Length: 122
Image (tube, rainbow, N blue to C red):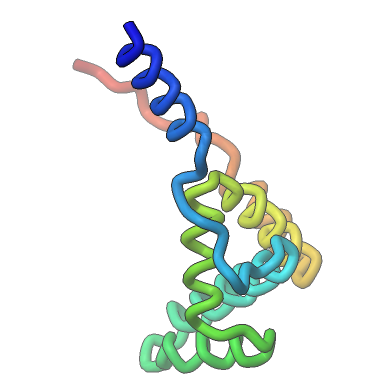
């Protein structure tokens, strides 16, 4: 009986701990959102101009925000593991819509379900 109680206590303590430790140089959520918005713009530029280098744009973005690549990667892993990345991405989308108000209509048109699809016949 003591072993069972000890095992249950151990499992309870282990289950309460986080999956990943908090990084030493964790970026705050607002800064992470700004970086993610700039990275999304960089990604679209690279899709438009196929001969451009994505890595150099990423380095420039991190340098302009005074962030080391390792700090960004560790913060990204932490926020994904803790489930806080969705809020950061939503904030990044809001930042993008503030930078380009015309994009809001485009995003809304792409988000609507297409009701003109043909019926599936088996």
